[in-house]
Length: 214
Image (cartoon, rainbow, N blue to C red; front, side, top):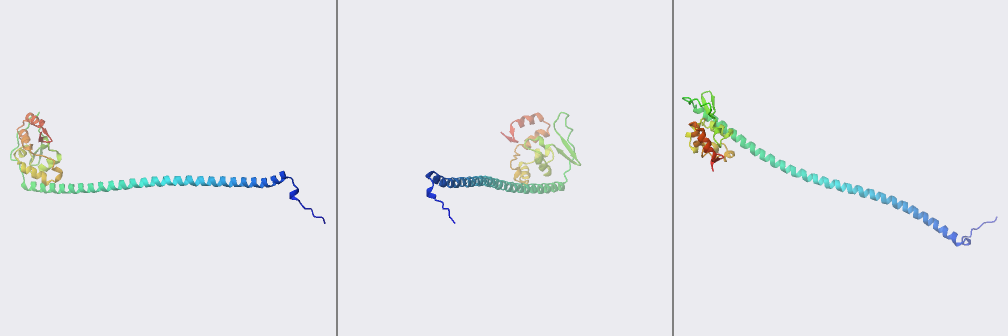
């Protein structure tokens, strides 16, 4: 048997060069494919990490907002609780004043002369008790009028004759909410209203601010 032997050295140098170049190029091509695939995977992971970082930042921002909102709500709740305590105290004071006023059994002996048609004075009759619209006095609103009624000051005459200490005492008993009220001119204004001097009362009130002399 005759064996055929391949003599690699018998080939010319171009063939030898190609025999080495082709495997090298094939390996280079395969390496490029693998590298491109790895690069794409790396870029995808980088984008995902970037998106997750943005979500984390947004969640941290939302958490800070929630913390601030919680603090604001807790402060508001504390304020509302304080206002509720003041209201309960005010209601308790008014109930006590009403009970005290009822025990005095204030009865009007004689009705005042009927007001003129063009007079802005308003009167309310409830049972035996006659009440004037004390809100005509600058510085007196609906709540203070109720306090004065509960304290036995029902008419302009009552207010005109009341001592400022009594009026101030009624306001003080109603709580700190009414500390801003200043009754220094209420009796004087009531004197004009009692006498039906509405023009004089209006002129007098023009020089007042919040019921106080400017």
